[in-house]
Image (tube, rainbow, N blue to C red; front, side, top):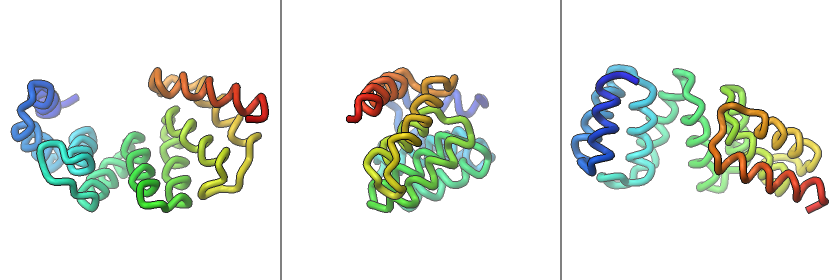
Length: 156
């Protein structure tokens, strides 16, 4: 993590959202994908600023182009919020290609529901098993994968 990004996270943690926003903006202009991701998040969730989903998408896509898997997942979530499930699935697949274990869980949920993809419990099971084997998954994602896998194996 670059120095400016570290300082931005410190400011964010201390509740100094204006400074954090300025530092993330500067880091993003310098080409730091983590700053781009966090700047996108500030716009996405309205952290200290007005919500602007277009700006969020812009920064997430810039971070994705630099190989940031979280950015791909966040793009998928923006599309899910818009009800564009085909694009949601496509972007979770891109996150999976960048080794995002949580995206495996999210794609499995789409496969279980048949939203944006053909419903398939067997393919969902593969993604859930991949998620559980991933070294790049949050504890909450791992727990959700375990719970969904049990449901899929028991026929929901």
